[in-house]
Image 1 (cartoon, rainbow, N blue to C red):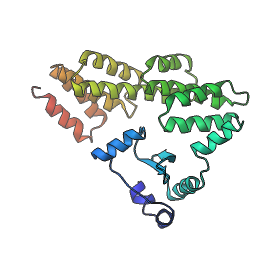
Image 2 (image 1 turned 90 degrees about the vertical axis):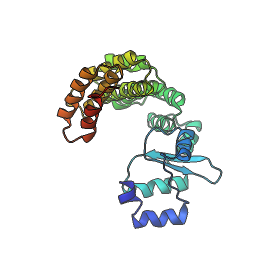
Image 3 (image 1 turned 135 degrees about the horizontal axis):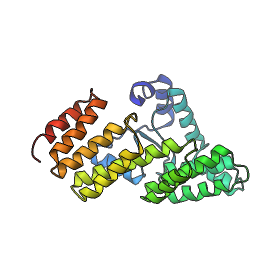
Image 4 (image 1 turned 120 degrees about the vertical axis):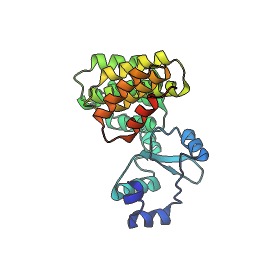
Length: 261
């Protein structure tokens, strides 16, 4: 949508050509992936604003409509609402809950998880935090620890915060984490029984109304196939096909599982 709607907008094109040197890099290329990893990218699309000294000014992920994208450009050009802007205010003595949360999110976006966690912990003891700030900080800490492969934090969060407005999001985050790790293990053909345990845990967290459920079923089927349990793999992938009958991929998976691996 960025390509189709935002990058073609005449106002975005005008300000980009006048004030920036816009460069688009494909992360499917070796060079693109190197840059993505260098800047600790964790999602696509990733938009980075870099100054002439090759220092990052700001970043954001995902789609923004043209008018919001222009605001991001203007903020980057003026160094407002950026990491350095928030950090300057924080170091100047502003330790309000609002600023701490904004600064913590900036560090989280940059992949500097420890700094983000430290700030979210500070938010939890801030005197002017709101109920939403408190709930968000607890959720953010748990998911940041998950990015560091500490699963105990998310387990404890889910155990103690069932009434939180972020509870369902945390469940999805944990299920997705388990799915990614189990799939990677299947790709590497490594520790497959452990991978099966992980994906079963992920499936137990959500139900078949969740849009991610077929993805997890596919991962489980892949692992079973790698374990030479073809009949079980076919049975599982058939569940995914029922849930998403339009997916040709799952049907192709069933054909693959019907052959010897």
